[in-house]
Image (cartoon, rainbow, N blue to C red):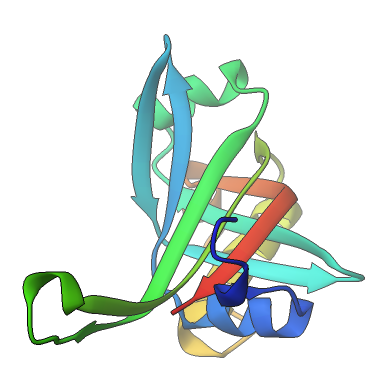
Length: 155
């Protein structure tokens, strides 16, 4: 990170930033080309490790790319605010962001998928238990990203 003065390294503060974000972008590769897709997400953290969960349709470009990825990238940002200046180069922008890499997998089985869906719902609603209809869980694709490395920045 070029601007070390803006880096956040405290794990709990990094989680605070992540919890303020409402969209996480997944970065995959498709025959050498970047493919970036905005996703609803949830997460869980324990012992200094982070796991992200995403909900998706069960088919499409993203789903077909997952088996071909060694690692994927992710990025989320929030708390945007323009800082006005006296000249164009004096303008700046406030933000908080997280970004990193990890291993992405498509979950199978009702229990694993429900756990991921509950984490997503908890992120957006603060409620941790939901009743999901089995046929909806069966149709849904739930992705789990085990984070290998991530960083956080604030300006």
